Amino acid sequence: MTAKEQAEAIFRNIPIGKENAIRRPDNKSVDRELRDMISKANAKGALIINVGTGIYIARPWEPEERRECEEYIAKERHRGLQLLMKASRMHNTMLMIMAEYYF
Image (cartoon, rainbow, N blue to C red; front, top):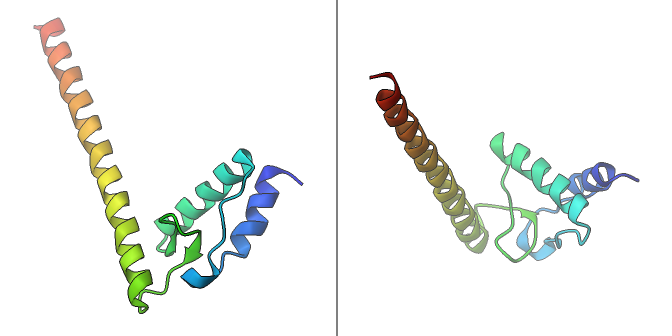
């Protein structure tokens, strides 16, 4: 069974609720594939999270899971803003170099 097939099997069985959370796979290739699948699912609106207590589908009506969901979302927003800031700075540097080169 390939790493992708193993990850797909795990992904299909991600449990609902923190009390059913599962550990990340020990195999790094399987883990990477699984995290990619989770990322794609979350980009479509899924609530698959892991804030250190294991991987599970959050139930936002449960207070502790809502808190963990909010924590996960805050981390994702921070990462996104950091990427945008990096891209903006790189773009500004490129424009400054181009301005010096062409003028």
